Length: 347
Ligand SMILES: C[S@@+](CC[C@H](N)C(=O)[O-])C[C@H]1O[C@@H](n2cnc3c(N)ncnc32)[C@H](O)[C@@H]1O
Ligand SMILES: [Zn+2]
Ligand SMILES: [Zn+2]
Image (cartoon, rainbow, N blue to C red):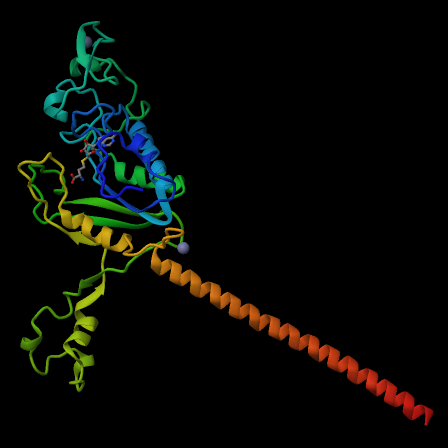
């Protein structure tokens, strides 16, 4: 299998070219639903309904699952959007360019006034004035009320686990420099989701540590005397490293604070490289078995388990053999006793 290759094209199609169970991990951020036009044929995100989008997206991840090793993991960055809003989709929107930021409309006739207009497939009326005649509630049409969060990330996660993935973490990518918004009737959203899935219960995961800031934030040398954490009192022998291990280092938490960055020459929606760093470090083994492709650590673990079972089996055999021996011994003893008793009787 070739490595360090960029395959430019449909994810669904290219995934079929990857050998089955051949990759260690997958990290991706697919286009969000109805947010923008990336200008490529067959692109994801311009589906008429969010259900269709979720199905198409999860079909791609079925392909990822096929290519992923048994011990592999899959990390997906997704954000949510408000239905019918500037960043969302749905509703009978005629000013799509302003609202959605792209145009992907077809010519059709208004179902009320028969006027020809350009609109998305779900649009039935030429404009808001005409849409007034449609009394079908949006919920009945499978639509949400405007301003409601579309809950794409949740719908996606649920469909993924329905298709057999194991959801191990929901990670919050917190953006401390998130764009201020002008909304007055809710809070400004400053995070996105990263879903961490595994294929099976046992998977490769290299534990990641992070600084533990809340216990002791200052420098070691500047720590006030007589103000040391309990465990430190009378324990001068504790080294800097031991202290760090105990007070400044811990298993990485699920809220990751990472500022977004702008890349003047790249497309929009570029994510900061640091966002991929942790998943890559956690999900990619340094060494893989040349024969079966398993990560070295899991191979060693399996070998140990195999040896333990073998030992346990030897132990069990020994126990059984001992029991046999005991049984034979007591039978022999009984026979001897019988013989003896017979002999005794005869005498
Ligand atoms: C949110 S962006 C990902 C950006 C990426 N995380 C980065 O930092 O550069 C989504 C990307 O998916 C691409 N895309 C859309 N539909 C696709 C499809 N069906 N197959 C493969 N890529 C697709 C878009 O062209 C766009 O580049
Ligand atoms: Zn009309
Ligand atoms: Zn192997």
